[in-house]
Length: 162
Image 1 (spheres, rainbow, N blue to C red):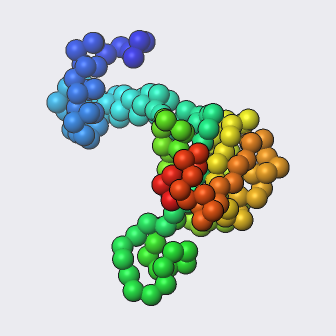
Image 2 (image 1 turned 90 degrees about the horizontal axis):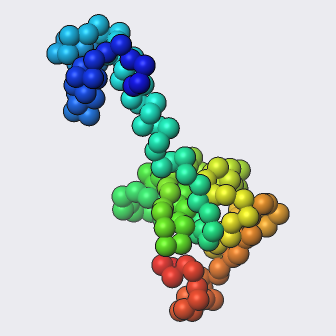
């Protein structure tokens, strides 16, 4: 930190201890600073990490969106509504990054805000024929549906993973 009263040596040592996972109280004892100072310094480091993390980046261009249910194998119902399964929304920028988020359910009022928070307007969003993506047709995105049963072997199919 530029305007810190701590010496550069103490700052470096606090950063090392932060990375090592040491508590602020223990770091304060080892470096020789007040526990409040170490706690504040650790808090500032967390803020800097958050501000520079990739989760704030937008996906743009051609983006694929799909939801899946993850969990162990169980007898009984499979897919949507199966016990112990966790719904996950995945967004993939073609030839780029992947973003996943745990969602409470696969309803439109859950899926669409998550897509809107991560995908830049005027991007092309590819989805399957799941009806809950219908609202993307009238949104700020260019929405394309791919029916995997009709275009499974098509080389132009952006959803080759089906």
